[in-house]
Amino acid sequence: AQSVTQLDSHVSVSEGTPVLLRCNYSSSYSPSLFWYVQHPNKGLQLLLKYTSAATLVKGINGFEAEFKKSETSFHLTKPSAHMSDAAEYFCVVSVRSGNTGKLIFGQGTTLQVKP
Amino acid sequence: DSGVTQTPKHLITATGQRVTLRCSPRSGDLSVYWYQQSLDQGLQFLIQYYNGEERAKGNILERFSAQQFPDLHSELNLSSLELGDSALYFCASSAVSGGGNEQFFGPGTRLTVL
Image (cartoon, rainbow over the protein chains, first blue to last red):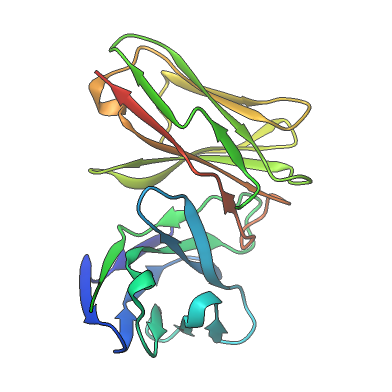
């Protein structure tokens, strides 16, 4: 079975400081991992994905994540937060080799960016 | 804009009623997924269709059903509605069915059951 744990329900940073959103996963098979972002009253947008290539994945808007198999982690980082980054972030897992693409979502982390 | 459309955006109805949510996938995508987002359960996978056939089921109640039509649009039918069914319902699509593929999400339908 697959599961995702987002270690922080709420993270608050100041504009211009680094962002770290933590995610641990559990998967019986080789996982695919994603980070999605949801702005207020909006749908979900893909930030980045890991499938099996480079362990350091670069996404949109300056975000990146590193897949660490030994730690079963896929933390999301950004060097410098912008006010527009304030949103809900979801770490997501799916089974790479499965014939269904269903996504398993973490509980989400709310990112607050203070001026 | 993801290219996935959902109608209606908002739906307010009463307990015991039946509603239908509609989703049009991105052009060329064969797979459609339905998810429910609620405060207590978070985002949960409901059901997946691929090229008209059911491919996977998640935590979907028996009162809920879905189908995908030959033109690839999908409908999610919710019946005998309860207060707890109030949630945001998302549709997503992908080109193929397998794991690891990016899914593109629609803006969602917010259902309020009074």
